[in-house]
Image: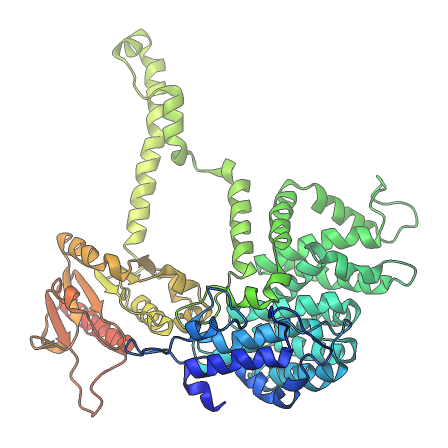
Length: 599
């Protein structure tokens, strides 16, 4: 561990050690003997720690320290070209684990019991189970990074969850599902759970049934159970999971329990869970009752209501449309790839250099939106179809038509124009609504520009403050920030009540000039030689509040577009405020002046 402070040293050393532990042949692809992995046993704890390791970012001035160049030289294990530079060391260890033989196909039992199992339980006990229920990790924090990397490592280790440890691992996994986790981390928890359930369907199936029947589950917990259940019962992995219900020793009672657990979620207030529960119920009912009979209720039959429910889910157009779209999502869910080093290391990363996969919840939400739009196409208000109607009937009325039959022509003319009046009224109503916030109060002519701010917690805090003080809108560098769990947690739903527009740093200068042309004054919050104290500035009513970067402030090229810079008086030793705090102070000063002016 001593070399972990030097990226190029740790990378080079670990890459060679991994090859030595594997005992690879000259092609670096095949283990030469049955002692593969034996040499790593004394370093089980070190390997567990290095699987969590995140390299330090190199300064631009650093030379001859590129970890990727060290990682791909000398004929050692080659990592994928898109591997993040802060994941090189753990990348070699993931490949070391992936190249070990299967537990039933040549792996030395000592490697399994003294190396791989200890690593699995170390990650679960020391990292994955160490979060207090209800608390939320901060994105980019050490705890967040370690938890993310622990679950990713467990995905690669999943094939070594053997029968003798499966029940213990199962209990720990489902305990972790009780935690409040970011969607990015929860994605890998679900991947690991699905993979283990395929290997040990009876053990994990029993626990799944127990969990889904609980009445105290959080929405996050329910979502994960539905995703896991959807993949195992409806998706591409149903063959692995449902085999426990086949043959003469099939556990039909367990299948009834799965159905009993899923049925109540058909009435869930969470549309996502309700939708998946529908396709699970539709899949399971034919496995427990005969649905081929045409008669819904036959004499002496106790399961007639299940038949009736199945017929509805099977034949209702909206249910069919929903099922078709969501089934496709599960069919494309590739757990096997994500349990390989290539899958882990090729996952896109966020601004904190941690994995940022597209969670199935987002895909399902899009499916639900599409189904809703398709189902309500016929309900489109008449004024939205004015253009099509006018094109079909013709929008002009000639004088000759009026002369021939004045009364009939006038009626026809009015019939054509009335929808346009409705359109104008609707547009005016929309315009008036846009001038007011969710409480009905008039918005202020204040635009808060956070285009230079990268950290999601700061943007979320500004969204909350801007909404509270009825700012017209908030400008962010990337609207994807508003979808992140820590944004939602910090902003406490403010993102749903304030208009949020996107403008990245590249387009910021032209955007600022455009706002000046629209009559706005650009006020920069920055300490410059010409800055004035914020309480001495009489804020114009139409103001764009420009905030700088977290460390550098407002770059020079943007200061050229600023009309005036303000600074906040400081009485302490520390000479700078957090950008979210500075923005909040400036928003309140603007609001105070506007309120005073109205009195």
